[in-house]
Amino acid sequence: MVTDFQSPPTQPQAAIFSSPGRRVWQRFRHDKVGIAAAAIVALFFVIALVTGLCAWWGIYFPYDPNATDLALKLKPPSLAHWLGTDNLGRDVFSRMLNGSYISLTVGFIAVAVSLFIGVTIGAISGYLGGWADNVIMRVVDAILCFPTFFLILTAVALLGPNIINIIVVIGLVSWTGTARLVRAEFLTLRESEYVRAARTLGQRSLLIIFRHILPNAAAPIIVTAVLGIPEAILTEASLSFLGFGVQPPQATWGNIITDGKTYLLDAWWLIVFPGLAIFAAALSFYLAGDALRQASETRSEKK
Amino acid sequence: MTTPNLLEVRKLSIRFRTDGGFADAVNNVSFSLKEGASLAIVGESGSGKSVTALSLTRLLPEPPAEIVHGDIVFRGEQVLEMDLERLRAIRGGGIAYIFQEPSSSLNPVYSIRSQIAEAIRLHRPEVKDVDSEIVQCLAAVGILKPEQRMRDYPHQLSGGMQQRAMIAMALSCRPALLVADEPTTALDVTIQAQILNELKRVRTQFGMALILITHNIAIIGGLCDQLAVMFRGEIVEYGDTGSVLQNPQHPYTKALISCVPRLGSKEKRLKTIEYDWLQEA
Image 1 (cartoon, helix red, strand yellow):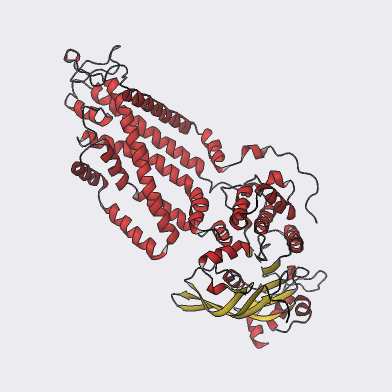
Image 2: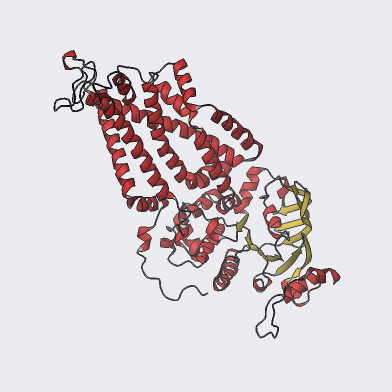
Protein backbone atom coordinates (compact mmCIF):
# COMPACT_ATOMS: atom_id res chain seq x y z
CA MET A 1 0.00 0.00 0.00
CA VAL A 2 1.40 3.36 -1.01
CA THR A 3 -0.21 6.11 0.94
CA ASP A 4 2.35 8.24 2.65
CA PHE A 5 5.91 9.35 2.13
CA GLN A 6 6.42 11.26 5.30
CA SER A 7 4.12 12.23 8.07
CA PRO A 8 2.30 15.41 7.11
CA PRO A 9 3.31 18.66 8.77
CA THR A 10 1.00 20.14 11.36
CA GLN A 11 -1.68 22.06 9.59
CA PRO A 12 -2.23 25.63 10.67
CA GLN A 13 -4.74 26.30 7.87
CA ALA A 14 -7.21 23.87 9.38
CA ALA A 15 -7.91 26.48 12.04
CA ILE A 16 -8.60 29.19 9.45
CA PHE A 17 -11.00 27.38 7.15
CA SER A 18 -13.45 25.19 8.91
CA SER A 19 -17.20 25.33 8.76
CA PRO A 20 -18.96 27.21 5.93
CA GLY A 21 -20.43 29.71 8.37
CA ARG A 22 -17.03 30.58 9.70
CA ARG A 23 -15.66 31.03 6.18
CA VAL A 24 -18.40 33.55 5.40
CA TRP A 25 -17.55 35.40 8.61
CA GLN A 26 -13.86 35.41 7.68
CA ARG A 27 -14.64 37.22 4.45
CA PHE A 28 -17.37 39.45 5.91
CA ARG A 29 -14.95 40.67 8.58
CA HIS A 30 -12.70 42.29 5.99
CA ASP A 31 -15.55 44.21 4.35
CA LYS A 32 -15.36 47.64 6.05
CA VAL A 33 -18.65 48.93 4.64
CA GLY A 34 -20.39 45.73 5.59
CA ILE A 35 -19.07 45.83 9.14
CA ALA A 36 -20.04 49.49 9.54
CA ALA A 37 -23.53 48.77 8.20
CA ALA A 38 -23.88 45.73 10.42
CA ALA A 39 -22.82 47.86 13.41
CA ILE A 40 -25.54 50.41 12.61
CA VAL A 41 -28.07 47.63 12.22
CA ALA A 42 -26.97 46.26 15.58
CA LEU A 43 -27.29 49.74 17.11
CA PHE A 44 -30.85 50.12 15.79
CA PHE A 45 -31.59 46.68 17.08
CA VAL A 46 -30.34 47.47 20.59
CA ILE A 47 -32.24 50.78 20.65
CA ALA A 48 -35.43 49.11 19.50
CA LEU A 49 -35.05 46.30 22.02
CA VAL A 50 -34.34 48.63 24.94
CA THR A 51 -37.09 51.14 24.15
CA GLY A 52 -39.47 48.33 23.36
CA LEU A 53 -38.84 46.67 26.72
CA CYS A 54 -38.99 50.02 28.53
CA ALA A 55 -42.31 50.86 26.87
CA TRP A 56 -43.57 47.44 28.00
CA TRP A 57 -42.80 48.42 31.60
CA GLY A 58 -44.12 51.94 31.08
CA ILE A 59 -40.73 53.60 31.31
CA TYR A 60 -40.13 56.28 28.67
CA PHE A 61 -36.94 58.03 27.77
CA PRO A 62 -36.18 60.95 27.68
CA TYR A 63 -39.87 61.98 27.85
CA ASP A 64 -43.22 60.28 27.55
CA PRO A 65 -43.69 60.11 23.75
CA ASN A 66 -47.39 60.85 24.06
CA ALA A 67 -47.27 63.63 26.69
CA THR A 68 -48.57 66.82 25.12
CA ASP A 69 -47.63 70.31 26.21
CA LEU A 70 -49.05 73.02 24.00
CA ALA A 71 -46.74 75.59 25.54
CA LEU A 72 -43.85 73.70 23.96
CA LYS A 73 -45.41 73.17 20.51
CA LEU A 74 -43.19 73.25 17.40
CA LYS A 75 -39.98 74.08 19.24
CA PRO A 76 -36.80 73.59 17.20
CA PRO A 77 -34.09 71.18 18.41
CA SER A 78 -32.57 72.28 21.71
CA LEU A 79 -30.68 70.76 24.63
CA ALA A 80 -33.93 69.91 26.39
CA HIS A 81 -35.59 68.51 23.28
CA TRP A 82 -32.80 67.16 21.09
CA LEU A 83 -34.87 66.78 17.94
CA GLY A 84 -37.47 69.44 18.70
CA THR A 85 -41.17 69.07 19.46
CA ASP A 86 -44.21 68.58 17.26
CA ASN A 87 -47.48 70.48 16.92
CA LEU A 88 -48.79 69.04 20.19
CA GLY A 89 -45.55 69.72 22.04
CA ARG A 90 -44.51 66.03 22.06
CA ASP A 91 -40.80 65.30 22.10
CA VAL A 92 -39.78 64.08 18.62
CA PHE A 93 -36.74 62.15 19.89
CA SER A 94 -38.88 60.21 22.39
CA ARG A 95 -41.44 59.47 19.71
CA MET A 96 -38.77 58.24 17.31
CA LEU A 97 -37.27 55.95 19.93
CA ASN A 98 -40.72 54.67 20.72
CA GLY A 99 -41.42 54.12 17.03
CA SER A 100 -38.15 52.31 16.35
CA TYR A 101 -39.31 48.99 17.73
CA ILE A 102 -42.45 49.15 15.63
CA SER A 103 -40.36 49.51 12.48
CA LEU A 104 -37.95 46.73 13.36
CA THR A 105 -40.67 44.41 14.63
CA VAL A 106 -42.59 44.86 11.40
CA GLY A 107 -39.37 44.32 9.41
CA PHE A 108 -38.31 41.15 11.18
CA ILE A 109 -41.64 39.41 11.65
CA ALA A 110 -42.98 40.26 8.18
CA VAL A 111 -39.78 38.82 6.70
CA ALA A 112 -40.07 35.75 8.91
CA VAL A 113 -43.62 35.18 7.64
CA SER A 114 -42.64 35.69 4.02
CA LEU A 115 -39.54 33.53 4.43
CA PHE A 116 -41.54 30.68 5.91
CA ILE A 117 -44.07 30.71 3.08
CA GLY A 118 -41.52 31.40 0.36
CA VAL A 119 -39.05 28.71 1.41
CA THR A 120 -41.75 26.08 1.88
CA ILE A 121 -43.41 26.74 -1.45
CA GLY A 122 -40.15 27.20 -3.34
CA ALA A 123 -38.72 24.01 -1.86
CA ILE A 124 -41.78 21.95 -2.73
CA SER A 125 -41.89 23.38 -6.23
CA GLY A 126 -38.19 22.95 -6.94
CA TYR A 127 -37.85 19.51 -5.39
CA LEU A 128 -40.91 17.99 -7.01
CA GLY A 129 -40.45 19.61 -10.41
CA GLY A 130 -42.69 18.55 -13.28
CA TRP A 131 -46.35 19.53 -13.31
CA ALA A 132 -46.48 20.42 -9.60
CA ASP A 133 -43.70 22.92 -10.18
CA ASN A 134 -45.56 24.28 -13.19
CA VAL A 135 -48.81 24.82 -11.30
CA ILE A 136 -47.12 26.43 -8.30
CA MET A 137 -45.01 28.75 -10.41
CA ARG A 138 -48.00 29.92 -12.46
CA VAL A 139 -49.77 30.79 -9.20
CA VAL A 140 -46.68 32.72 -8.15
CA ASP A 141 -46.68 34.53 -11.50
CA ALA A 142 -50.32 35.42 -10.98
CA ILE A 143 -49.58 36.87 -7.55
CA LEU A 144 -46.66 38.81 -8.97
CA CYS A 145 -49.04 40.47 -11.42
CA PHE A 146 -50.73 42.40 -8.62
CA PRO A 147 -49.17 45.76 -7.79
CA THR A 148 -47.88 44.75 -4.35
CA PHE A 149 -48.27 48.05 -2.57
CA PHE A 150 -51.89 48.53 -3.59
CA LEU A 151 -52.64 44.99 -2.62
CA ILE A 152 -51.22 45.65 0.85
CA LEU A 153 -53.06 48.96 1.05
CA THR A 154 -56.39 47.39 0.13
CA ALA A 155 -55.93 44.44 2.46
CA VAL A 156 -54.96 46.65 5.40
CA ALA A 157 -57.85 49.01 4.69
CA LEU A 158 -60.29 46.08 4.69
CA LEU A 159 -58.85 44.23 7.69
CA GLY A 160 -58.17 47.29 9.78
CA PRO A 161 -54.83 48.97 10.28
CA ASN A 162 -53.26 47.37 13.34
CA ILE A 163 -49.72 46.12 13.68
CA ILE A 164 -50.52 42.42 13.44
CA ASN A 165 -52.56 42.86 10.27
CA ILE A 166 -49.81 44.95 8.72
CA ILE A 167 -47.14 42.36 9.51
CA VAL A 168 -49.23 39.46 8.24
CA VAL A 169 -50.29 41.25 5.07
CA ILE A 170 -46.75 42.37 4.19
CA GLY A 171 -45.53 38.84 4.84
CA LEU A 172 -48.33 37.30 2.77
CA VAL A 173 -47.66 39.31 -0.35
CA SER A 174 -43.86 39.43 -0.34
CA TRP A 175 -42.93 35.74 -0.37
CA THR A 176 -43.00 35.32 -4.14
CA GLY A 177 -39.43 36.47 -4.74
CA THR A 178 -38.13 34.12 -2.05
CA ALA A 179 -40.17 31.26 -3.49
CA ARG A 180 -38.70 31.77 -6.94
CA LEU A 181 -35.18 32.00 -5.60
CA VAL A 182 -35.52 28.90 -3.43
CA ARG A 183 -37.10 27.00 -6.31
CA ALA A 184 -34.21 27.89 -8.62
CA GLU A 185 -31.68 26.79 -5.99
CA PHE A 186 -33.54 23.53 -5.44
CA LEU A 187 -33.76 22.80 -9.14
CA THR A 188 -29.97 23.02 -9.39
CA LEU A 189 -29.14 21.36 -6.09
CA ARG A 190 -31.45 18.38 -6.45
CA GLU A 191 -29.45 17.33 -9.51
CA SER A 192 -26.18 17.61 -7.62
CA GLU A 193 -24.03 14.56 -7.04
CA TYR A 194 -24.30 14.67 -3.27
CA VAL A 195 -28.08 14.66 -3.42
CA ARG A 196 -27.84 11.67 -5.71
CA ALA A 197 -25.36 10.13 -3.29
CA ALA A 198 -27.82 10.68 -0.44
CA ARG A 199 -30.49 8.92 -2.47
CA THR A 200 -28.21 6.00 -3.22
CA LEU A 201 -27.72 5.72 0.53
CA GLY A 202 -31.47 5.29 0.89
CA GLN A 203 -32.13 8.63 2.59
CA ARG A 204 -35.76 9.76 2.64
CA SER A 205 -36.87 12.74 0.55
CA LEU A 206 -37.81 14.96 3.48
CA LEU A 207 -34.39 14.55 5.06
CA ILE A 208 -32.68 15.11 1.74
CA ILE A 209 -34.53 18.42 1.49
CA PHE A 210 -33.72 19.57 5.00
CA ARG A 211 -30.27 18.08 5.52
CA HIS A 212 -28.71 18.24 2.10
CA ILE A 213 -30.41 20.84 -0.06
CA LEU A 214 -31.58 23.57 2.30
CA PRO A 215 -28.22 24.19 4.03
CA ASN A 216 -26.59 24.59 0.63
CA ALA A 217 -29.23 27.11 -0.36
CA ALA A 218 -28.94 28.91 3.00
CA ALA A 219 -26.64 31.71 1.87
CA PRO A 220 -28.92 33.22 -0.78
CA ILE A 221 -31.96 32.70 1.45
CA ILE A 222 -30.35 34.57 4.36
CA VAL A 223 -29.30 37.35 2.01
CA THR A 224 -32.81 37.84 0.60
CA ALA A 225 -34.14 37.81 4.14
CA VAL A 226 -31.75 40.57 5.21
CA LEU A 227 -32.58 42.54 2.07
CA GLY A 228 -36.29 41.98 2.70
CA ILE A 229 -36.19 43.69 6.11
CA PRO A 230 -35.64 47.26 4.80
CA GLU A 231 -38.29 46.54 2.19
CA ALA A 232 -40.80 45.76 4.93
CA ILE A 233 -39.68 48.76 7.01
CA LEU A 234 -40.18 51.06 4.02
CA THR A 235 -43.57 49.51 3.28
CA GLU A 236 -44.70 50.05 6.87
CA ALA A 237 -43.41 53.65 6.77
CA SER A 238 -45.27 54.26 3.51
CA LEU A 239 -48.46 52.77 4.95
CA SER A 240 -48.12 54.92 8.06
CA PHE A 241 -47.48 57.95 5.92
CA LEU A 242 -50.71 57.30 4.04
CA GLY A 243 -52.55 56.80 7.31
CA PHE A 244 -53.07 53.07 6.88
CA GLY A 245 -50.22 52.10 9.13
CA VAL A 246 -50.07 51.66 12.88
CA GLN A 247 -52.59 54.14 14.25
CA PRO A 248 -51.84 57.21 16.39
CA PRO A 249 -51.14 57.91 19.15
CA GLN A 250 -48.61 55.06 18.82
CA ALA A 251 -45.66 56.73 17.11
CA THR A 252 -43.96 55.19 14.10
CA TRP A 253 -41.37 56.78 11.88
CA GLY A 254 -43.90 56.94 9.08
CA ASN A 255 -46.70 58.64 10.99
CA ILE A 256 -44.37 61.20 12.61
CA ILE A 257 -43.65 62.33 9.06
CA THR A 258 -47.37 62.36 8.20
CA ASP A 259 -48.15 64.55 11.18
CA GLY A 260 -45.19 66.78 10.40
CA LYS A 261 -45.83 67.36 6.73
CA THR A 262 -48.44 70.03 7.50
CA TYR A 263 -45.75 72.08 9.22
CA LEU A 264 -43.05 71.35 6.67
CA LEU A 265 -42.07 74.99 6.08
CA ASP A 266 -42.03 76.02 9.76
CA ALA A 267 -40.77 72.88 11.46
CA TRP A 268 -38.33 70.97 9.23
CA TRP A 269 -37.19 68.80 12.14
CA LEU A 270 -40.51 66.98 12.19
CA ILE A 271 -39.73 65.43 8.83
CA VAL A 272 -35.98 65.38 8.47
CA PHE A 273 -35.13 63.32 11.55
CA PRO A 274 -37.61 60.47 11.14
CA GLY A 275 -36.81 60.55 7.41
CA LEU A 276 -33.14 60.15 8.22
CA ALA A 277 -33.91 57.31 10.60
CA ILE A 278 -35.84 55.43 7.91
CA PHE A 279 -33.11 56.17 5.40
CA ALA A 280 -30.29 55.07 7.72
CA ALA A 281 -32.05 51.90 8.81
CA ALA A 282 -32.92 50.87 5.26
CA LEU A 283 -29.49 51.75 3.86
CA SER A 284 -27.57 49.94 6.57
CA PHE A 285 -29.73 46.81 6.15
CA TYR A 286 -29.17 46.92 2.39
CA LEU A 287 -25.42 47.42 2.71
CA ALA A 288 -25.08 44.73 5.36
CA GLY A 289 -27.15 42.37 3.22
CA ASP A 290 -25.07 43.11 0.18
CA ALA A 291 -21.82 42.55 2.07
CA LEU A 292 -23.23 39.26 3.35
CA ARG A 293 -24.09 38.26 -0.19
CA GLN A 294 -20.58 38.96 -1.37
CA ALA A 295 -19.06 37.11 1.56
CA SER A 296 -21.22 34.07 0.95
CA GLU A 297 -20.54 33.80 -2.76
CA THR A 298 -18.26 30.81 -2.84
CA ARG A 299 -18.83 29.89 -6.42
CA SER A 300 -16.15 32.10 -7.93
CA GLU A 301 -13.72 31.03 -5.25
CA LYS A 302 -11.42 28.12 -5.83
CA LYS A 303 -12.21 25.13 -3.63
CA MET B 1 -27.47 -26.96 -6.83
CA THR B 2 -24.86 -24.29 -6.24
CA THR B 3 -25.10 -21.49 -3.68
CA PRO B 4 -27.77 -18.95 -4.58
CA ASN B 5 -26.60 -15.82 -6.29
CA LEU B 6 -26.37 -12.55 -4.39
CA LEU B 7 -27.58 -10.66 -7.40
CA GLU B 8 -29.19 -11.89 -10.51
CA VAL B 9 -30.20 -9.72 -13.43
CA ARG B 10 -32.25 -11.43 -16.12
CA LYS B 11 -33.14 -10.05 -19.53
CA LEU B 12 -33.27 -6.49 -18.29
CA SER B 13 -34.35 -3.86 -20.80
CA ILE B 14 -34.55 -0.18 -20.01
CA ARG B 15 -35.59 2.64 -22.27
CA PHE B 16 -36.00 6.38 -21.92
CA ARG B 17 -39.05 8.24 -23.08
CA THR B 18 -37.99 11.28 -25.05
CA ASP B 19 -39.82 13.79 -27.19
CA GLY B 20 -38.66 11.93 -30.27
CA GLY B 21 -39.88 8.51 -29.14
CA PHE B 22 -38.15 5.90 -27.07
CA ALA B 23 -34.41 5.62 -26.65
CA ASP B 24 -33.33 2.10 -25.80
CA ALA B 25 -30.59 2.29 -23.23
CA VAL B 26 -30.26 -1.32 -22.10
CA ASN B 27 -31.31 -4.41 -24.04
CA ASN B 28 -31.76 -7.90 -22.61
CA VAL B 29 -28.92 -7.63 -20.19
CA SER B 30 -28.32 -10.65 -17.97
CA PHE B 31 -25.61 -11.32 -15.45
CA SER B 32 -25.23 -12.75 -11.99
CA LEU B 33 -22.99 -12.30 -9.05
CA LYS B 34 -22.20 -14.59 -6.10
CA GLU B 35 -21.56 -13.37 -2.54
CA GLY B 36 -18.17 -11.73 -2.45
CA ALA B 37 -17.61 -12.07 -6.18
CA SER B 38 -16.57 -9.25 -8.45
CA LEU B 39 -17.66 -8.20 -11.89
CA ALA B 40 -16.36 -5.52 -14.17
CA ILE B 41 -18.70 -3.90 -16.65
CA VAL B 42 -16.68 -2.33 -19.42
CA GLY B 43 -17.94 -0.21 -22.24
CA GLU B 44 -17.82 3.18 -23.86
CA SER B 45 -19.85 6.24 -22.93
CA GLY B 46 -23.54 5.68 -23.54
CA SER B 47 -23.27 1.91 -23.66
CA GLY B 48 -25.69 1.55 -20.74
CA LYS B 49 -23.26 0.68 -17.95
CA SER B 50 -24.37 3.34 -15.50
CA VAL B 51 -28.05 2.92 -16.35
CA THR B 52 -27.76 -0.78 -15.57
CA ALA B 53 -25.99 -0.03 -12.30
CA LEU B 54 -28.51 2.57 -11.15
CA SER B 55 -31.45 0.35 -12.06
CA LEU B 56 -30.27 -2.24 -9.52
CA THR B 57 -31.92 -0.20 -6.75
CA ARG B 58 -34.35 1.67 -9.01
CA LEU B 59 -32.44 4.91 -8.76
CA LEU B 60 -33.25 5.96 -12.30
CA PRO B 61 -35.79 8.75 -12.50
CA GLU B 62 -39.01 7.09 -13.66
CA PRO B 63 -40.25 8.71 -15.91
CA PRO B 64 -38.41 9.28 -18.24
CA ALA B 65 -36.74 5.93 -17.59
CA GLU B 66 -38.88 2.85 -18.03
CA ILE B 67 -38.04 -0.75 -17.27
CA VAL B 68 -39.54 -2.59 -20.21
CA HIS B 69 -39.03 -6.09 -18.93
CA GLY B 70 -36.62 -8.20 -16.97
CA ASP B 71 -35.92 -9.26 -13.40
CA ILE B 72 -33.53 -8.01 -10.80
CA VAL B 73 -33.20 -10.41 -7.91
CA PHE B 74 -31.14 -9.34 -4.91
CA ARG B 75 -30.75 -11.89 -2.10
CA GLY B 76 -33.74 -13.75 -3.46
CA GLU B 77 -35.97 -10.65 -3.50
CA GLN B 78 -37.49 -9.09 -6.59
CA VAL B 79 -36.16 -5.53 -6.64
CA LEU B 80 -38.69 -4.41 -9.23
CA GLU B 81 -41.58 -5.40 -6.94
CA MET B 82 -40.28 -3.69 -3.81
CA ASP B 83 -42.02 -0.71 -2.22
CA LEU B 84 -40.16 2.49 -1.46
CA GLU B 85 -39.46 1.57 2.19
CA ARG B 86 -37.83 -1.69 1.19
CA LEU B 87 -35.90 -0.01 -1.62
CA ARG B 88 -34.54 2.58 0.79
CA ALA B 89 -33.28 -0.19 3.04
CA ILE B 90 -31.54 -1.85 0.09
CA ARG B 91 -30.00 1.40 -1.11
CA GLY B 92 -26.79 1.80 0.81
CA GLY B 93 -27.55 -1.04 3.20
CA GLY B 94 -27.55 -3.82 0.60
CA ILE B 95 -26.10 -2.16 -2.46
CA ALA B 96 -23.88 0.88 -1.95
CA TYR B 97 -22.60 3.14 -4.68
CA ILE B 98 -19.56 5.25 -5.27
CA PHE B 99 -19.42 7.65 -8.16
CA GLN B 100 -16.99 9.24 -10.50
CA GLU B 101 -16.74 12.74 -9.08
CA PRO B 102 -15.84 12.53 -5.39
CA SER B 103 -15.61 16.30 -4.96
CA SER B 104 -19.25 16.80 -5.88
CA SER B 105 -20.55 13.62 -4.26
CA LEU B 106 -19.79 14.99 -0.81
CA ASN B 107 -22.03 17.68 0.60
CA PRO B 108 -19.86 20.81 0.98
CA VAL B 109 -21.59 22.07 4.13
CA TYR B 110 -20.99 19.05 6.36
CA SER B 111 -17.85 17.50 7.75
CA ILE B 112 -16.85 14.02 6.63
CA ARG B 113 -17.78 12.73 10.06
CA SER B 114 -21.35 13.95 10.00
CA GLN B 115 -21.91 12.61 6.49
CA ILE B 116 -20.65 9.14 7.37
CA ALA B 117 -22.57 9.31 10.65
CA GLU B 118 -25.74 9.95 8.67
CA ALA B 119 -25.15 6.80 6.62
CA ILE B 120 -24.50 4.74 9.77
CA ARG B 121 -27.59 6.01 11.59
CA LEU B 122 -29.67 5.23 8.53
CA HIS B 123 -28.62 1.65 8.02
CA ARG B 124 -27.11 0.50 11.26
CA PRO B 125 -29.04 2.22 14.05
CA GLU B 126 -27.74 -0.45 16.45
CA VAL B 127 -24.22 1.04 16.35
CA LYS B 128 -23.64 2.86 19.65
CA ASP B 129 -20.20 4.36 19.18
CA VAL B 130 -20.62 6.04 15.83
CA ASP B 131 -17.33 7.94 16.00
CA SER B 132 -15.17 4.88 16.46
CA GLU B 133 -17.05 3.19 13.64
CA ILE B 134 -16.25 6.17 11.39
CA VAL B 135 -12.61 6.06 12.40
CA GLN B 136 -12.52 2.37 11.61
CA CYS B 137 -14.02 2.89 8.14
CA LEU B 138 -11.71 5.76 7.32
CA ALA B 139 -8.70 3.78 8.48
CA ALA B 140 -9.81 0.84 6.35
CA VAL B 141 -9.49 2.95 3.20
CA GLY B 142 -6.02 4.16 4.12
CA ILE B 143 -6.77 7.59 5.53
CA LEU B 144 -4.10 8.60 7.98
CA LYS B 145 -5.03 10.13 11.34
CA PRO B 146 -8.74 9.39 10.80
CA GLU B 147 -9.68 10.98 14.16
CA GLN B 148 -8.52 14.35 12.83
CA ARG B 149 -9.43 13.92 9.17
CA MET B 150 -13.06 13.10 9.96
CA ARG B 151 -13.56 16.63 11.25
CA ASP B 152 -12.51 18.03 7.87
CA TYR B 153 -14.91 19.45 5.33
CA PRO B 154 -14.80 18.01 1.80
CA HIS B 155 -12.91 21.00 0.35
CA GLN B 156 -10.05 20.38 2.76
CA LEU B 157 -9.35 16.97 1.23
CA SER B 158 -7.65 16.12 -2.03
CA GLY B 159 -9.51 14.22 -4.76
CA GLY B 160 -8.00 10.90 -3.73
CA MET B 161 -8.87 11.51 -0.09
CA GLN B 162 -12.41 12.49 -1.04
CA GLN B 163 -12.85 9.28 -3.00
CA ARG B 164 -11.49 7.35 0.00
CA ALA B 165 -14.04 9.11 2.18
CA MET B 166 -16.79 8.12 -0.28
CA ILE B 167 -15.66 4.50 -0.13
CA ALA B 168 -15.57 4.73 3.66
CA MET B 169 -19.12 6.06 3.64
CA ALA B 170 -20.22 3.16 1.46
CA LEU B 171 -18.40 0.70 3.75
CA SER B 172 -19.96 2.19 6.86
CA CYS B 173 -23.34 0.75 5.79
CA ARG B 174 -21.80 -2.75 5.49
CA PRO B 175 -23.34 -3.42 2.07
CA ALA B 176 -23.25 -6.86 0.51
CA LEU B 177 -22.50 -5.30 -2.86
CA LEU B 178 -20.50 -2.22 -3.73
CA VAL B 179 -21.14 -0.64 -7.10
CA ALA B 180 -18.23 1.56 -8.15
CA ASP B 181 -19.29 3.68 -11.12
CA GLU B 182 -16.08 4.90 -12.76
CA PRO B 183 -14.48 5.45 -9.36
CA THR B 184 -11.12 6.52 -10.69
CA THR B 185 -11.97 8.48 -13.82
CA ALA B 186 -11.68 11.87 -12.14
CA LEU B 187 -8.37 11.03 -10.47
CA ASP B 188 -4.84 11.10 -11.74
CA VAL B 189 -3.03 7.88 -12.54
CA THR B 190 -1.05 7.37 -9.33
CA ILE B 191 -4.13 8.03 -7.22
CA GLN B 192 -6.11 5.69 -9.48
CA ALA B 193 -3.75 2.87 -8.59
CA GLN B 194 -4.07 3.64 -4.88
CA ILE B 195 -7.87 3.78 -4.98
CA LEU B 196 -8.04 0.50 -6.89
CA ASN B 197 -5.77 -1.06 -4.30
CA GLU B 198 -8.00 0.20 -1.50
CA LEU B 199 -11.04 -1.23 -3.26
CA LYS B 200 -9.35 -4.57 -3.61
CA ARG B 201 -8.32 -4.60 0.03
CA VAL B 202 -11.63 -3.55 1.57
CA ARG B 203 -13.44 -5.99 -0.65
CA THR B 204 -11.63 -8.91 0.91
CA GLN B 205 -11.62 -7.33 4.37
CA PHE B 206 -15.38 -6.71 4.42
CA GLY B 207 -16.30 -9.64 2.18
CA MET B 208 -18.30 -7.54 -0.23
CA ALA B 209 -19.20 -8.27 -3.80
CA LEU B 210 -18.09 -5.61 -6.24
CA ILE B 211 -19.37 -4.31 -9.54
CA LEU B 212 -16.78 -2.07 -11.12
CA ILE B 213 -17.98 0.06 -13.98
CA THR B 214 -15.35 1.54 -16.20
CA HIS B 215 -14.46 2.45 -19.75
CA ASN B 216 -10.85 1.71 -18.99
CA ILE B 217 -10.21 -1.96 -19.61
CA ALA B 218 -6.68 -1.59 -18.29
CA ILE B 219 -7.68 -1.20 -14.66
CA ILE B 220 -9.79 -4.32 -14.18
CA GLY B 221 -7.15 -7.01 -14.31
CA GLY B 222 -6.51 -8.36 -10.84
CA LEU B 223 -9.55 -6.62 -9.37
CA CYS B 224 -12.46 -8.46 -10.92
CA ASP B 225 -12.99 -12.18 -11.52
CA GLN B 226 -15.61 -11.64 -14.17
CA LEU B 227 -15.91 -9.27 -17.03
CA ALA B 228 -18.92 -8.11 -19.03
CA VAL B 229 -18.37 -5.98 -22.10
CA MET B 230 -21.26 -3.69 -22.93
CA PHE B 231 -21.78 -2.18 -26.33
CA ARG B 232 -24.85 -0.19 -27.44
CA GLY B 233 -26.93 -1.37 -24.50
CA GLU B 234 -26.09 -5.04 -24.81
CA ILE B 235 -23.65 -7.32 -23.12
CA VAL B 236 -21.64 -8.55 -26.07
CA GLU B 237 -19.18 -10.63 -24.11
CA TYR B 238 -19.33 -12.07 -20.63
CA GLY B 239 -17.01 -14.44 -18.85
CA ASP B 240 -13.96 -14.88 -16.64
CA THR B 241 -11.72 -11.84 -16.84
CA GLY B 242 -8.65 -13.85 -17.80
CA SER B 243 -10.24 -15.79 -20.61
CA VAL B 244 -12.07 -12.80 -22.05
CA LEU B 245 -8.94 -10.69 -22.06
CA GLN B 246 -6.76 -13.42 -23.53
CA ASN B 247 -9.22 -14.76 -25.99
CA PRO B 248 -11.77 -12.10 -26.92
CA GLN B 249 -14.51 -13.25 -29.25
CA HIS B 250 -16.49 -10.17 -30.11
CA PRO B 251 -14.86 -7.63 -32.45
CA TYR B 252 -15.74 -4.81 -30.07
CA THR B 253 -13.90 -6.51 -27.22
CA LYS B 254 -10.90 -7.08 -29.47
CA ALA B 255 -10.94 -3.45 -30.50
CA LEU B 256 -11.24 -2.33 -26.87
CA ILE B 257 -8.29 -4.45 -25.82
CA SER B 258 -6.15 -3.30 -28.72
CA CYS B 259 -6.76 0.30 -27.64
CA VAL B 260 -4.80 -0.16 -24.44
CA PRO B 261 -1.35 1.30 -25.07
CA ARG B 262 1.55 -1.03 -24.30
CA LEU B 263 5.00 -0.17 -23.07
CA GLY B 264 7.58 -0.89 -25.77
CA SER B 265 5.06 -0.95 -28.57
CA LYS B 266 6.46 0.18 -31.91
CA GLU B 267 3.26 1.83 -33.03
CA LYS B 268 3.35 5.59 -33.45
CA ARG B 269 -0.35 6.33 -33.05
CA LEU B 270 -2.68 5.14 -30.32
CA LYS B 271 -5.51 3.01 -31.61
CA THR B 272 -9.09 4.18 -31.60
CA ILE B 273 -12.24 2.25 -32.37
CA GLU B 274 -13.47 2.72 -35.93
CA TYR B 275 -17.13 1.87 -36.28
CA ASP B 276 -17.03 1.10 -40.03
CA TRP B 277 -14.45 -1.47 -39.32
CA LEU B 278 -16.54 -2.92 -36.48
CA GLN B 279 -19.53 -3.43 -38.67
CA GLU B 280 -17.51 -5.23 -41.32
CA ALA B 281 -15.91 -7.58 -38.85
